[in-house]
Image (cartoon, rainbow, N blue to C red; front, side, top):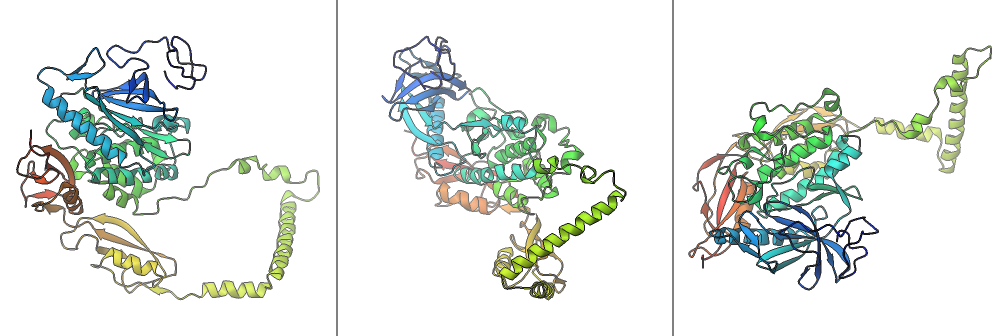
Length: 526
């Protein structure tokens, strides 16, 4: 009832020879019984975990004979288990139960659309029976990020952290663009598989990961943003950014930040100087920005976070002492002893002999290539004689335009975004300043740093008339807002189309990165 490696229908009370699970252990009361069948296909095993939303079971897919995970929507705060195993809402909670169950179903469908993303756990099937919804997930051979960091010596290098988290940032950006926020990203829900790649798991409806709902609250201290502790504050992508920043900090230091409510008094992250020396300054700044307590000051989207982390090369050169280097004996052991000549003479003589051997080997190789040392010298000299490059003035012009010109080879220097900042004069995506300035010269291959405008810090809410949420959320994102979807019954607006803003009006001015709740039609109430 755990790994199903030796499953035989009807057999119970024995220990599994593979995983050691004792099948005589009874299922906790109120949950599906062992060997319950769903959709005449899935055999239910032991309950693996539970929270305010439902229960996760080990299970066997009889059509493939492979183990799977099944998530059952069973909010025990507002529902009960009947004798036949079905779920029924408690008295006075029918409407709430129905709304949360629809949220659970929509979440499952949204995650199933992400099947092509290898960093997201795969939804294999969605079932509706027993008065509730079941989501079938594939099982990956993986460990939690917490366990992975512990097994790696307590913290990861920046290179390893960047490699693990970059695909996750891209995936979470896409997930939130679909109107789905995770709200439970943590070192437990991020897992690392056998290939050393990160996986996003444990999706749940928003109601269980924020205060104010009737469900039992599940928050991850250190990862949950401050707005998740409030029933009134809007939660969304900006909340997931906070959680991911906390996980990156954990990967680099082995410690999560303090709980958000405690950080209201002291926002310091308390990173040791030894660790700070190993992390690029731009990465420290990006993580710190993602962990701002106030939403208005926090990085508002994963696109912005990715831009901040891309403001310098993602990988930093690291000198690591390899096993081969460790095995090299000290120079003194190689020096001849009991000789009349001083050790330094022997050392110089050894270097001279090595140099002769290298020259002979190089001569042989060059001869085989039809070249001589003179030819090689001419090539070297020609490479040193490349003329300096005059840097053009790029201020006020589009970064994308200049990136294309540099990539085409028109200019023989590298263009790097040093930082992005708000500017009320320069349009978003255009260059505010550059170093070196226009007219100065650089050597071929040198770096030209630019500062790019993020546009104005105060943005105006756009009009939504006649827009579907799928189209309008892209408009809001482009305007620098973090859209959050909230469905509302309406007999006047077509299902899936925008009814309006929840707490604002068209034309209202808000700070860049603000979370905006959009009311979306769920169709007539009946």
